[in-house]
Image (cartoon, rainbow, N blue to C red; front, side, top):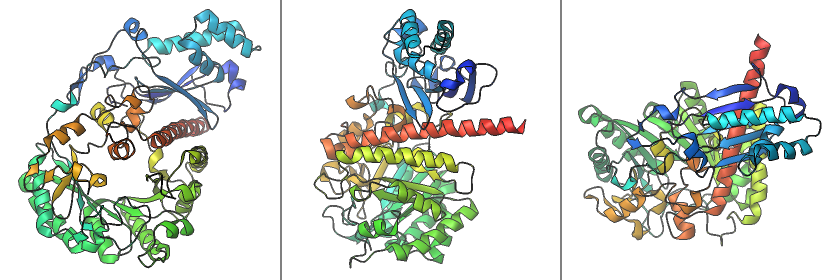
Length: 533
């Protein structure tokens, strides 16, 4: 959530009603226990964050405004999200039902309805639970109002600062992945080519010149397959390091690779210079080989798996970041097995995400696939809870969520910054909003010599945020997904402010699962604390 908002996870429990809970939770000091708490500052105490102004309405005004509360049950937990305050509550059954009735019923009506459902519970106990809900409302952690929308500074007026580049160092690839958005490295009809050093050098100069006072700059070596242009990668890193002190900049280089060309020299260089590496593998051998073959049609799994395992092992030993990243399709909707196969091979940092493809492709995710995919996320989340604090524990990128900090409100509202703060560079120096728009001339923004010339397009992307997208207005996930991917929205609706509906459904499930995992981990930690006393 925006970092001016109080973010907490609370167990709102009634010790006398523990039999009503679907899973026992730890109760400390009576009926309420704070499992997660932010820095303790109420949002009323903060007047500005990240250059964005906001105000807070008093309780009366807040209660007269639209409020978004999301409730769901998963893996034995009753979870209540107050979207606009950022609070997350884990509650018992009675409290859960009271909250679901709170907006549309009076106190006495709620008491009668709940009493009818829970006949063994006294009315006084129900009213006591209601009072606890009301206390959360009065405290500004439940049924709050949107304190951002009415006072946010117009995004289009913020400075034009570029913070990150995706360098398409190679428009060529040594694999022929069937789902590749980059047309197997050719990027929609562009000629296959490698980026010359001079173009990459100019791209770094453009980034430095366009970054204003920002010190930390990010450069991702991408493709195609960037290791096909390895000498230029090394020279560009060397050049970037050579100008850091003079320009008062710090480059954070990353590399995305399919692993085919990995060797000891490349691994050692990356472990010295790359903040992060992303290693592409889809999971089980049969799944990977079906979608990620060599040009001759043979599978690539056996070639890459020993290399990326060794690379990941070395980075873990050095405490360096990496991810193994896969894609699931219509052909492996049981994708949790692919995630777990990677975890069981010893990878601890894993990302496997749904393919985004035109509906006519045989591997595209369909609406009929969605129920199965949702159940897979449920199963994966439950398995991760089981593995918590064991030697089989791992991180799943799409379940990682920061409930006590995270990006500022600006990042929460605007997402990745494509077309403004983040740009993609082709081998011949053209600029696009991101790598997924490369090759679509409607989105050509300029080049690394002349800078951004299509300022109208830049302003369109600058105006993209959760408030510019109608589908985000009432969505509980809006501060977590930041409005979703502009490229996916455009490809499915023709507008960067559109909605890729299947993607939204899956994203909401991932956020629910991530929060459930946090609740379960807090539960486990609490039990250990009790045992240690």
